[in-house]
Image (cartoon, rainbow, N blue to C red; front, side):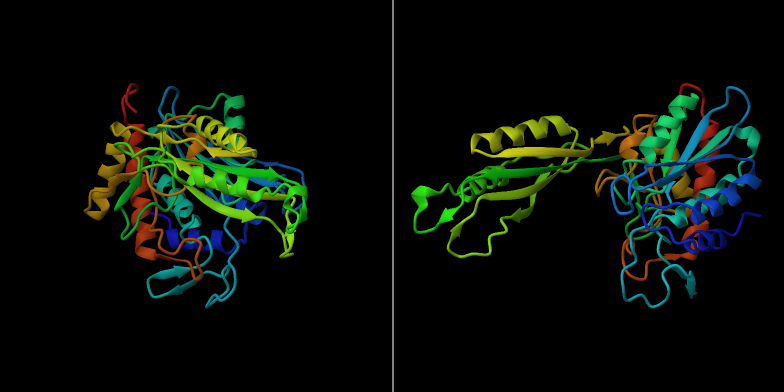
Length: 384
């Protein structure tokens, strides 16, 4: 009989793990995996103060090796959660059942999915092949010391999965209606324009930076980056912040700043877009500093996506839509390791107050994950 997925989810939810996560929540996951035959390796990366990008992050890699030469599927995800905020009907870290719903921070994003992964692999015989867990405590934060550090560890140990399934909440209206086969890339670009402060009545003695900033933003806002591709929606550039900090009505400011965010498809790279924005900023007398947080990726529809879709349809009765919509995830890093697909719970309440998962969905997700694991491990050596 399959492990009680709701009980596993409750144990994880009850261990507070606001990003960056360390400690108790990893203790719980290790205690779940060890009896299933997994060798668990945990490590902490980052040594900066709390709240900084260098704050300590815990990561966990667990491996149950199959026979020599067998295939290897990895389950990936994160145990950190966003801050719960105020106004919950119950303690966000005290899991509570209301009818068929299990409430608690992380129920959907994504402790529920990790619980389903654990229950799923308990149903897969060890001789079927190799299974691993790639679990970080830094997906909801800067993502500097999480999955990237786990990839470094795997490379150092010579560990190479054939396929990777990420348990992000991809379903929209009901479990199984959407599978993510790719994601757009993301770059944030900080724009600065310097001037010379002065009195508004004596503009010849000053240099107003704001018309330059407006010209930069106007040109950027007028850009049409592309019209989309077969699998990706059009890239979009959004102005997300303008900051002058001038509280005086009669002063020409000394500087102005802005920030833009670009979500882009596979017609671009973070570098190519950054170069384009930097050239526009320089043309109008400004400077641009890009921070690329992820490149786009696409796992072309094929054996892996068909395998996942077949498992979903077998349990839910619906054929999932293959999609690349939404924000970024740690799949943007894992794509460098092996083909990666995302599939998980309904995302309606993720990051919201009173986050909740339908308990029947947890059980169904575990069964889907079992089907995926068994099918992936049974693939011929040349199939992905």
